[in-house]
Length: 135
Image (cartoon, rainbow, N blue to C red; front, side, top):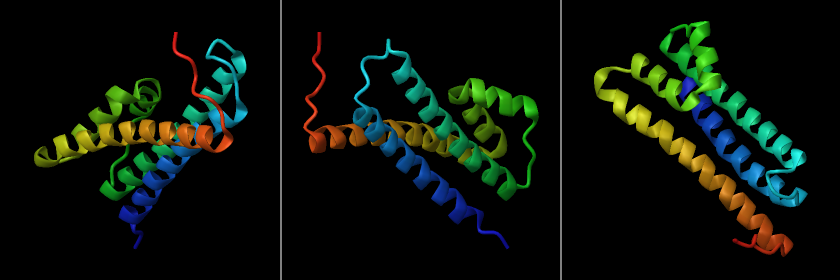
């Protein structure tokens, strides 16, 4: 019997670790502002990594619940994750577990943002990189 709960937890840990690394890599590369194509590419690649890890979690969740997500939902999740992941959670959870599941999703999103900021801050402190000037 497969332990989906443990695999899903490991996937969430990987999501946090990848977020931390994205912050570290962003500062380590020392790329200029978002107007530069290289920084945009690094950001895009980081977001793709997070999307792949997120899809791994969704795949495990679908298998645990023994359901099959339609292709249109997968496409919508890729394009508009902030809308369609909560939709998926709403449709696949009993009424009393819908709100906590959706809240947990947004908690993971904010946790990833926080982990990225921590990674960037740690890299700035360890490398002696000054904080960016504010206009």
